[in-house]
Image (cartoon, rainbow, N blue to C red):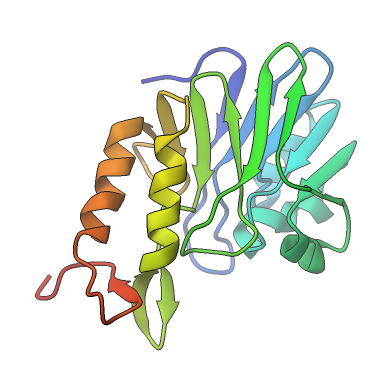
Length: 204
């Protein structure tokens, strides 16, 4: 499946940790171009710098999503409070925000296991989730926080978007139910005595 004309995808770069760069998505409005994440790669930065009238929306504070802010010019940066501690710029999203600019864009926080103060972006039929469907590392184990995962599933079920878009994933575009079913499968393995769920079932 391809994106509609008003959405452009700039692929991730996953060579190694230092050069790791997230997928970047450009949503074209009538007045502004909205970047969802900016990546961490000079070639990606060169492509982004050619785009006029940019507003950057940063999903979370991890380096592969933010470091190109030092390489590109933007009209504005919208981010979470924790992300701003790393970027030292921009404005913090307070609650939820809807932008009407030829396309309707909705920004809101999504509780998840991967990172705190995580912003997702909804545009048309697409909900951009960045890395929010991924786990975290706790004491050397790749795990999901069961309570946060449960809240995440409930929020995603309410989304009107038909398609969910995931960063660092060759497929990228999933039907809404595919992602929700994947997360529900992980949540079904929870142990009530343990606040965390291993990313993969025991024995895998």
